[in-house]
Picture 1 (cartoon, rainbow, N blue to C red):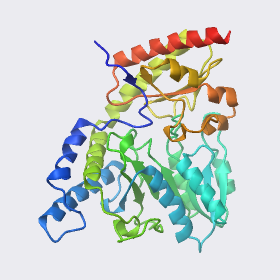
Picture 2 (tube, rainbow, N blue to C red):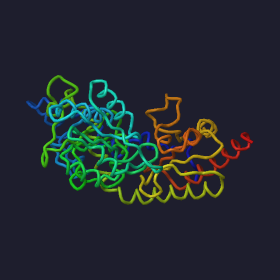
Picture 3 (cartoon, one colour):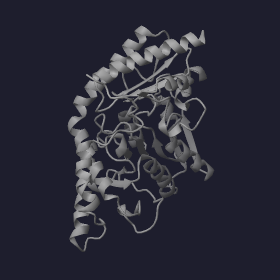
Picture 4 (cartoon, one colour):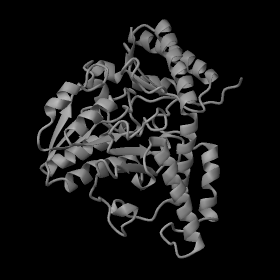
Length: 387
């Protein structure tokens, strides 16, 4: 089988829009082009119908109610609304937030902003696999704690958080539980009711939908959660996020969510097998391969490795026909080593040699085999130079 180059293995950064998703979106650009808020005529009603269906499709994926889905521009905005919105709305109850040192920058930078505004933030450390200690979480809780924000799956190393246990602890103490689910949602089963999740950030482009559209799940009851808006003007999306809705993107988001729900189990099994094959064969052929992240509690399509004696920047330079990354796509402008790998306690050398390989729906076995061969070739070159 002929492989089309370059081979894309950076699905944690973004995914291609599924052609079935695009087919659902196209009519909403030129035919059903109405404003979903203009419901005095058929054009607006057609647009609203598309939005309503998408809201239900996304809600179904996470076992939520359709009116608990608030559309945003992506998970970054959703994270900002969750942290800033809760801090403002519940200021009368307390001023303390708990998060984690390996969070996405959208959460970490929002937390820093809250500190500038006088709020108190506890940043929990992680173990060598990237998971928090639940006893440390309990110990960090004070009577002033109003929010716990721990991401569902790390965007760099793929480690999964113990969501059920965190949700139980938050509920026992009457604290709101937010999770950044951008990497998790659509790739593993996620039930907001079973996990006691109160706020969930989602991004369409991580699950084969279009870029520039996301959602924030906001629990309506048991308990009812409220967030203050950070964007004003018109009262759209229940007053939480004003602005004319991006109907084509929302329709695509809904279609992508429905496809993920139908194909999730089979896809996860296939990609987990591919990742295991890559790790096994690279470890056999290259000296000094180390897995970053949890060996089993991890995303099925993510593999983050470090290779002793190399630098990831040199690797990506040699692998011109393989699209992999040295870390988070949101942090590529930062020359410093990954804050996530450093937090595992391994030091800068391991962080600077880390490679993130992430697979997806269109990844083939032939592409996996080709990538393995190219990485082995590049490692020999780099380790020879190092000697």
